[in-house]
Length: 575
Image (cartoon, rainbow, N blue to C red):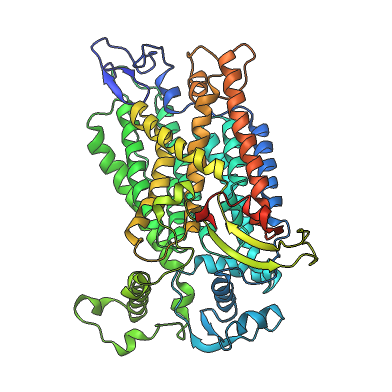
């Protein structure tokens, strides 16, 4: 491989007539010496394996305590829990969704809260989202009963697990336990993620499966590049051409990502945009690795050797997984629209499609019409929010409110003439979200300017969870949909904080120090730059934690005097 001389920092190969081998120390665009190619392909992971897991589990435990603390209160159906908790129990009891009694208004809710679970009609119900999230809620109801703790258990569990996944993913990306831990801590104290982890809605499950899928893709990138790097150590006969860029058709992490994307689609269809974008990004990573190795015709080979298997592992596996999530509907003849095909004969190519699947396709058409029909475009809601304002929390949503609580009522210590109230506001921690908006802009600059792959992960995740909603801003949409954006926002914040933290050592002569120069892994007493960076990063994290503590009462249904509530409603659009 005498044609490969150096690899610049973004991992792309350059050719030279100097005749250097793959093991030669090249130089980056700034003229700094770089470690061997195999170390740049796969920088070593942090050596603090035990310490990394101790930090991970400690932060995850803290996040879990926050989310499970008084989880069963308030003892009522909060916002759309009235649909999802009952649909989940219907799936658990009958295998498919049934309608529930609705006269007088709220009759089913009152009956369930009083212990009477006989609230379902024999007729099936059209549910307007796939069933994965509702089956996950049903698992909690199976374990703990049809009560507030039962239907909120799984959201709290998977909200907590999202924190764990984010820590490990950011740690892998940065090779820094510190930066990974910062990411997990920040997500643990985000108000929106916290609230969505404590109510039985679907979006927290969508956020989990998306983060899980991306985590698998990042792990696959490492897994693949490690094997490419190992191929450099394979002895070859004298005069033989070294075989690099091996065919890696079966990649378990990528298949796992496909399964996670399928489960995300089975929770909400909006996951399709994230699947598509990360499929392209994963191909770009493969192409970059082969180009860095000096593989001839790298794009063509990567398209064939990586692209086709990637399509199978991601798109096809996701599609099969999604279809499998409808097994309950397919097995129950009484499910909504299940017998549609029997009274609607097939025509043309649809004659070869089994009736059950034609009926399922019709079901999907009805669900799509529900979300895009003219009737919903003219609907309004007091808490509807334009997605343009989501990154800066222009219009949060109130899930529950009890107004005009009189002084003297238990918990209300308001002075005479002032009432109290109880609210659950799905409000992101402001300092984190505003700092996150700036971090995302900086991440975009670093991704384009320095071609650092790590910054592309939060950008692609954030954009695909945000931008598609602009196509639906003519119907009521809500800020809580943005819970899928916040893990990627926090990822961007963590990467930028790593930049601010600065290098652990001044010299850049090895893979470990190269990583440290961009992520930061330890505080060096000899570096004023490092001390200043540590102070800035520490101050930001502390301020975010304090901000979360300040808004805690309006996230958790605490009784507050009206002036105290107003002091947390910083803008008129929040009220």
